[in-house]
Image (cartoon, rainbow, N blue to C red; front, side, top):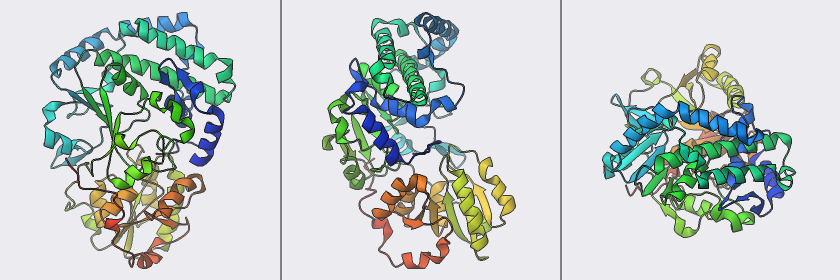
Length: 454
């Protein structure tokens, strides 16, 4: 989970947030609770994106006109979506939304779902992604506005959201900037909900699988309204420092309304124990699935030109490029000739942020290759608090976490549990590595990854 422009640690953010909302009942609207919707707005900070408008600040008449225009403009889109849905109406399980994939023998392979497709059969699933990919059935970008937006139930939700957001008791909890982001996230929540409501009412899905429950509250509400069981597959790091996992007992009384999945499947018992520190899932709701993600052929010839070099793999994180670039420039000057730095950029980052390093540092190469292959060809991994630390553990490699004050709560947790080793930004990890090699076999670290049951 990235900070995306935060100027607070997660601990500071959570202390401030939970001091404001009490037991969370101030976020109740009808039969739901806006806990995660509000967190989404505060975390993402939509008002910094520029193109998103706070429609809740407009009059009801203006908003109705906006919706009617959108409905009319989306007429052809609705027809196309209806045809696509009717062609997959026999599928009983909805799966999405990730479009992360690797190329395997020239074929695009979805990282999160390939094992599931192979074991259970691709034809049993309707695969929806957030972009147009050859192996998906439908894209969220194709979703359209329908007249269901004015149904009695849906329009009641709109009106009650507006009442909540304008109530003096609610407004006084937040700064002007926070309130704007909450308004935007609530409006996005509503319009995404009515789009999902339109799609789901035209099918007979019984279950849904997704890899990230947060930022998908609209989808979860639509599933609940259509009696579809929602299952989350662990997609990466879960920490007691998280904003969207391990919720405090303080909000336990409203947690059932707060749009969480019905079940969550984790890699191993270790992650189940982490989640049980929070109040959002009971033990019966947490299932151990094992490492279900697709594992590529690590015998690839990637980096063949570097076969005479020892590789330091650096996996970057979204919105932390300033820290990584500073570290890489300093490290480059400290390395002997037998070492090379490979920088693996985060999927949401533009490689251009780091390509300048190749010109400045002769021993630095920036890539966006298969992670497992890169880890196996490397001596060790350096990041901050990335999920890749646990990928390295799975593949029997040590990791270092850069000691950056803004991320200290995450880093501290990773070091305390023994998953990573603390590294100051001016330290040379090659000088520390030998002392780590005497440690026990890190591939057996706790029960992080169980054998997949898929």
